[in-house]
Every structure is written in C-alpha cells, then in structure tokens.
Length: 165
View: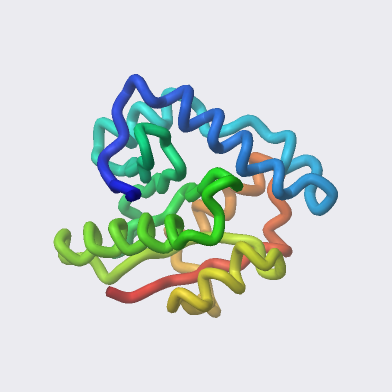
C-alpha cells in the first residue's frame, strides 16, 4: 500500500537519487536532461520547510515525490517523479491529487506546471489527468520560463498547463 506524506529533511538525498533514476527515461530522447543534476538540496530543504514536498512511500521506500510552490493563484508543480519500478500504478496521479487538494484547501485556483509537449509521459499524460494547455503564459509563468532558459531547457518544446480544482 502506498502512503502519501510530507517529505522529511533526512530524505533529501534519497529524493535526489530518485530524481536521477527517473531522469534516465530521457536517455536517447534528451541526453542533456538525463544527465542534468537533480534539484539542489537547498531547494528541497526549503520546500520541505514550506510544506511543498510530498512523497509516496511503499514498504518504507520512497517510490515518488511531488515538489510545488505557490505561483500567482496556483500551486506550481516544480518537479514530480516516480521510480521506474513503480510506474503505471497511478502514484504520480495520487501525488498530483494530493497537491490539488492542498491548492483547494488554500483557496487557490488549482495547479500549474511546465512540461515537454510531445513526450508521452509528460504533456499527453497530464492532459489525460485533466490539465489543459495555456495559450498565453501569465507573468509568473514567464518568470519560470526565464528560469528554465537559464538552465538550458528547450522552451520551444515545452508547454504550460493548468488544472482547476
């Protein structure tokens, strides 16, 4: 049985290792992304302190995580990953549902994220869950896009999406 809960500071390196393992799905598609460093420990620690990092745990092993922060009137999903061994079990969907519930209880409009348009486990997956593409990025999304460009991400291949709660 999978249990969702807030991440703990002592789990930061486990979460970083999970992010590295999950990125291996991009080998052969986007090798630079597959080789990219995971989220910095300081960012993970800040999200834990703010309540913006949840994990999915099964048999005491972290199977996935979602990291989010408020941007404008939504919780922005900064990162979501599930270990490949746990793929196909709706763990990612459950993590997103928990983030959506957090947005709802905070009185926010919903969730937002930026993802790759054509990768099957990115935009097409989120559309199946109910996210919709954003035609014109908001000012907050434009700031996120600038952050992505500074990291070397190909923003032409990405799309912002929202999910109302």
